[in-house]
Every structure is written in C-alpha cells, then in structure tokens.
Length: 292
Image (cartoon, rainbow, N blue to C red; front, side, top):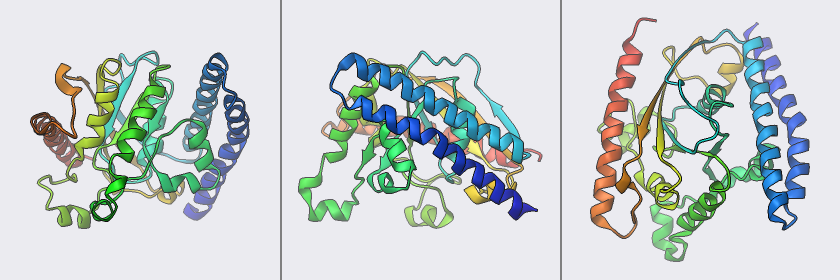
C-alpha cells in the first residue's frame, strides 16, 4: 500500500506541476517584452499562478498523507511585507514543508539555487520564470584555479535583490548551504550537535543589497521526529509528523555592511549568525526529545 500511495502522490505532484507550468511559461514569455508596467503585471500573475501551484501540492498531501503538522509562530505574518527567511536544511522535503506553511501568509518564497538546477526538467524553467536566482557556488579549490570567477555570485545576488525590491518578497536562504548529514558534520568538525556550520556570506550579501527593505527575519527550525524523510518517503506516507518553529526577529540596523572587504563587520556578522545557530541547535535538541 505504501508503494501505491507513493505512486499516486508522486503522480499528482507531476500532474499539478505540468498543469501550472504551461501558464507560467506563457506569462514568462510575455514578461520578456521590455515594458516596465507590463513586466510588473506579469510578476504579479506569476506569483498568483505559483501560489495556486503550491496550494495544489498541499491539497495533494492532505488527501494522500496522514501527516501531523506541529507548527508554531505563524501569527501576525503578512503577504504585504518583505522577509528574509532562514532555515536548517535536511531534505528536499524541507521545501514543500516551507511552502505549505507559508503559502499566502507571506510573499511567495524565492530560493537561491545552484545554476545546475535550471536543467531540471519542467521545474528548472518554472524556477527561471519565477525569478529564482541561479548561483554558481564555486568551490574554494575552483576559485583558486579560476580567480576571475570570484564575485560572480555577489553580482548575481545584487541583481536578484534589485528585482525583489519591486514587490513584497520572501528571500529564502538555507544558511548551511547544503543538506545536513552526519558525514558532512564530521568532515566540518561542526561545533553543533544537529547542524552544519552556517555560511554567513550569502545572508550578509542579501542584507547588504536589501537592508532598507528587509526589516524582519523569520528564523525557521524544522524537525522530523521519526527520521528525515526523502520526497519519496513523503509520497509513500512515511512522514508521520513534522515539527516547525518560526521565530520572528528584527534585523539589526548594523547588518547591512561590506561582508567581503570589511573584516570587523564580517566577524560581527558571523558572531550574530553563530548565536542564532546555537539557539537553533538547542531548539532542535528540545524538539527531538519531546514526547512523540
């Protein structure tokens, strides 16, 4: 029965994607016309389509799954504000979880994605149509061999953030930069029990580019008390519960600074993110140990 449920759930995800991808592509083509007013109307239409896409996925999960959602901290949010959203990262399931709890409560989430993901069938073009920023994310070794590539992601971040200023947007950042595994934790010698080391640079670049627009941080913590599921596990009904805590935090006035070239600011920003990560690590421990 789990396999049959998985096939049904995954098929509904694909059908929902295909249904909404077609109008997304059509509006994206119209948006290529270099008329500012038309482009703004296309942006609003794309968000409307995307919100219905996400709502379709959420309906699919409600109909085919029996997940207990333990969510706190959604009170007082607004779709008319700009937010920076940060979260721990464990699985591809994190994305539909975030989309489900925030859909229509805050502006549509925009993720920074690896450039290779633009080639994902159907989804890659949908992300492009929705103005998800695609980043190079070169390794340190690559940058040592190709120093001319330094700064490419900073330029891309600034360009994306300039676009985000046009209408309320939620900028999403998985601060760890990759999904958590015990092997990665050991390789990093991470000081946290349940997290990888935060990569503060991406968050700092966003705040520098949008400091006058982004005034509130949504610090999200996700815990899967019965084990971290894959997307297939979710479709098969193997995610009985998810626990989510959303903490609203004011972004400090000093947080818009030159992370790349100012060592004092960089140290202060890393200390701030590190303190948030220490609190998140403790929260994860409490959520994991709570009665199931």
